[in-house]
Image 1 (cartoon, rainbow, N blue to C red):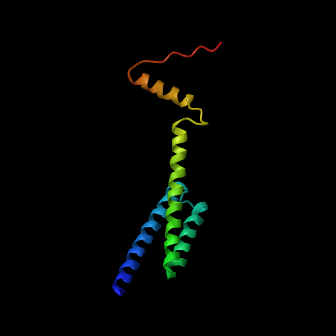
Image 2: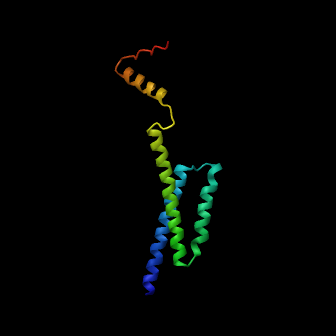
Image 3: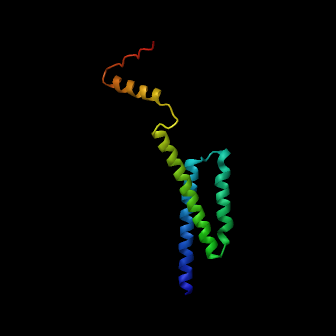
Length: 118
């Protein structure tokens, strides 16, 4: 029974480290890593270190689950924003499309005509 407890604690430590790394990666990717946003990373590090000595199994599982869900939230919000931009929601990309078309035409030696504006 004692050996099983040690194995469980080891796997939980590995799981916590995995969640910690993925959360820090998500914060770095989606929030940033510059000086003005450093407090996000510092807070996460502080919380993980503060809760490293918690011995209650349910509390540990809840904290790991919370960190995992926050990581999922950060990644999902970022993905949702990318989808909105790719579907041109609330973004006028007509100028961007004109540039792409002009570059495409120029690559084969053509020039698009100017659009008549009365």
